[in-house]
Image (cartoon, rainbow over all chains, first blue to last red; front, top):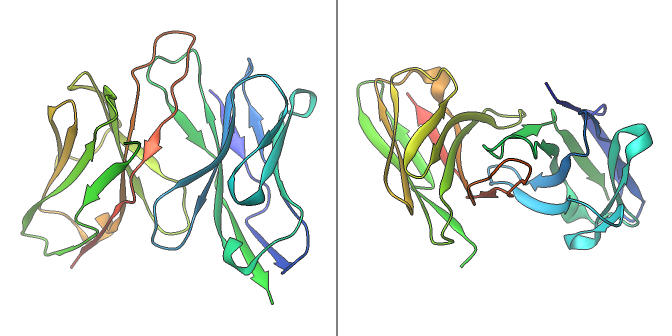
Length: 115
Length: 116
């Protein structure tokens, strides 16, 4: 069974600083990879996704992520964090061989932004 | 229209009440999902409907009863809930997948349920 690990439960960065959120997955083939953001009490918003092709993926709100097959990682980055980026971030993996389009979520990383 | 809508946004109910959550999409998707999300946790899959038929039930208690009356609508009927059922309930939809091809799920904003 596949699994997704987000090693950092909480991260605090200063506004304007760079950000990297880590995501590692366990899956035999090339997975479909997603990053979602969730503000308190809100639903999930898709930031970006990787299905194939260029391993550096650009998303919304200035985020990007890089798929590294050798490290089984899909880390999320942003060069300059804004206070509005404070939220919960979930990495997720989709199984292409599973006809049910199942998603496996990581445990989430809570981002706090210091003024 | 690439939106999944959910009503109501908030719901407070007693343990003896019967209520329903509604989810709607007009993207032509034939797979729809219910998730439960507790605070500071990732979403947990509850049910999957494929072509209006229940295809996955993740051992959810019978006090949760899903219904898919047509390809655009998904309901979750609630009866005799417990306080620990208080959570954010998320609906999602996707194209129906076939082997070897994955279809992205689109999520609604959720219904915040409080059981007193």
